[in-house]
Length: 310
Image (cartoon, rainbow, N blue to C red; front, top):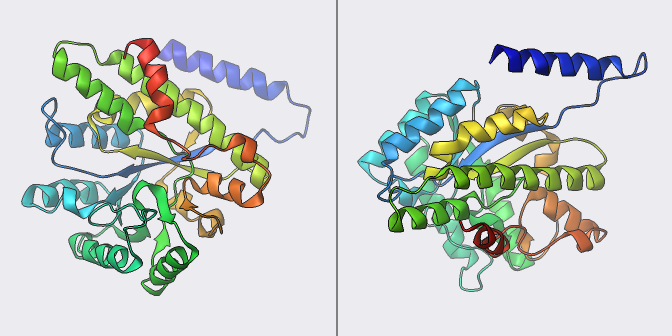
């Protein structure tokens, strides 16, 4: 371990000495952990208490404070309150992710239904000390019509909420689905290939959204990484954090990231939503050749994982 740290320090000194005198060192990209959908039901392969402990331990090891986005229906129980209490006690932000996880871009989801569901969630989380008025749209869908989009944005403002935007979207949940499907068929199967895939996938998406943000905005922004309260992260979150650090990313607390002015932006796109970076790029009309819709989906990862036998 000491040799590895020495080599890292030596490499940093060599790189710094190569810069012309008076040249500022390049700004490190910054990133924060945000986690959606805490749940007391994670399948037969891990208990929620074990998963929760592993995730919180990984964050504590790196002295990180995350933002937890709570979908009420998954924690509306005594055990759910216990789970949220553990996050609250550890100093992480407790934020809203609706009660029922409705897709606001679906034609059948009316503004009235979505707004009522949003209001239903607050009583479950507002008693926690770290309760924070940040709202994350389920599936990052912010409305399929201008009327729905603007009505709900007005409601958030009236209720004192800001949007807990994602800048780095990804499909960790799908990697988790594939891993658990394998374990159902082969209980003794190794999970390591899925952890390796997760790390590579997240680094790839982070590089994409970082570069897109630089091209759209012209400067670095603090990024928010979308992860889910799943077994895959209970097993490999520490590896993810370490891998990003090794690649030159600087981990920061979620509150610090969300304080940046970029998170107040409200792109005027339709259908509304996706990663904030994706939406800002879409709004310009200059990056359509680099944007797919939706921004992230299982359909993009399936052929890759199939080819690897995962």
